[in-house]
Length: 220
Image (cartoon, rainbow, N blue to C red; front, side, top):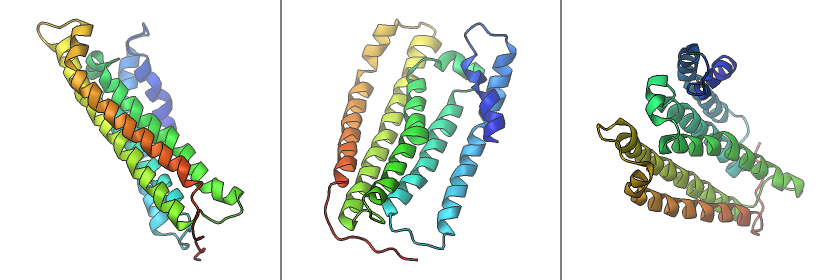
């Protein structure tokens, strides 16, 4: 599903760059299928964890792995679908709705994968089965801080995008670009707060690798 929908689904990038009109059909149809493999991946991830025979000592890494599946589904799947159909994308392309989709999709599909691998491999490279309990608790807090901040960023950019589309492209009397940007200032300032909170979560994540505490035991 990922291969079929993903390859042809990239046609949603070809809508407005002078390519033949059939790409609007191909890009729309196959992009609309892309949330399906993302959802299947999410179900698979939770199914594997629920049926595991070993309670892995690195609970933080397991949480990051599950979070990757969920956030990739939401960011790349759901938020991508929101504006992937050509008739909708005609109005939303290049707006803050695109930015909202990009933020959550990149975080879920790429950033969290890297953070998962670091979380899993760092203790092993230090000769430990997992980080100590204190460090893991801090890392789990960093997970929720960063993830919820990214959700907030995405929702704020989505709100800004909806308003931008209406004022700049859809209304009977469209406003100039910079005039619309002034109207979106409140969304941008709130997004800045969410971004700073995200940065705090990232510092928590990095600091967790230097926290001392009681080592965890591996439970088979």
